[in-house]
Image (cartoon, rainbow, N blue to C red; front, side):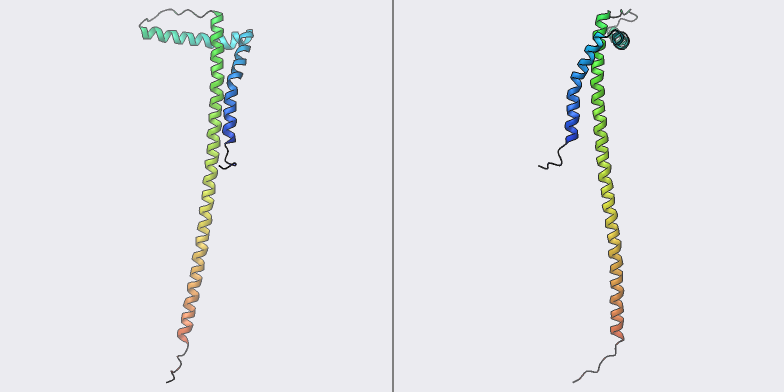
Length: 157
């Protein structure tokens, strides 16, 4: 097992995701206590969610045009707090996914750049070797030419 390859970033993301549930619960509890938060943050989405849900159920069951009563304030505050908590968890999870994607893309880009650099180095070396081969070939031709231009010594018998 390679110690350097330990996925520290993945452990960090997992920790953030594990901590998101208690954070969301604390925010929900604060939302239930605060009048401003309850009236302007929790109630409107809860009422909208209730209206959409009930409208959809009524249409599925075949009741068209039925009047949908809004939730009472306590039930709407509770539903709004739950929606807020789920939204926070969803946003944190989505953020972790975006960060992981970004990290993977960075790693992939770095590997591609290293590969391109290696290919460039190999092409440079190949060019240098081709030049060295041509130089040696020219030297061999020159030696052969010099050898052929030497006078032939008479053979002694």
